[in-house]
Image 1: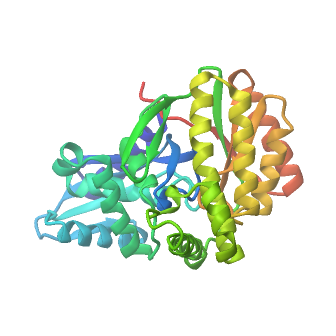
Image 2 (image 1 turned 135 degrees about the vertical axis):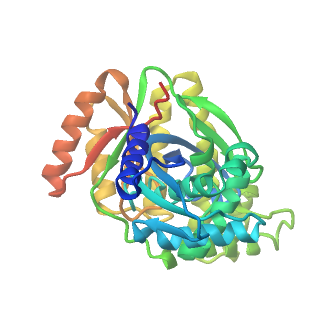
Length: 366
């Protein structure tokens, strides 16, 4: 049984215990881990995420009074936001009791909130969500839900991947076009998620400030090249030309995005070629850029990546997600996965004093 199946079974049992009957349906959505392409999605750029075998599940028990009640009540904000977004989009929701559960770590950079939103959409509007909406349409709905619920202007990556993830590969996603191609993970490679055990202190203002710096940089660069509509359109040559017009922080944020977009394509090529050494080097470069230019790493994220790289089976590591805590990933030779997880977890705990959680990424649909 996969982890997602176990979560679905758990919420079904909770629903039966609470209401004395099995749920009418159970909707699920996976979390995701982003292999490379961080803070590029809201700049119309490129990302390379994959789904993980951790999920959110929503069991639906019908009501006759038209009300929608969520258990636990801590999910109420997202439920209300989902109902509101569906209503504005012209969809009505039948009365229901919702039993919500999951095992996507919260605040770890594995997209627990997007998984929740996608699962809620599938639960509350199953005919539309399962048969008519594209991943891009689901992503746009979730963006609206996230804005209403948290006031964070998220990009499309997290909900898109939660809606479209498949086993065995990552999605090379063009965030402007809303289209993806599958990039298989080489059979001799594994992606290991390294949860530092610290939760990000990413204040909404920190995320929005970085997004605003990128928007400000675009407005300035447009005075040189009016064809630019997002940092995705900027080359390093154009950025160098505009440097004297940009505030230092705007230049650093923009440089990260421009270079990170190039790394996404290089990383996808390396995976397709089975060149793990090249792919690992790109992960290391991405982490350094996120730490030094975008300034969203943390002491624990830096440490766990350093510890991971010391293991002979690891070819590269970087923080993943919005930053300031949560998870990092390591690209590991498959034959070394179990040893890597055991030894890296032990050494990280020794040096940090924090017990992290280390597990292999990837959805298992067997």
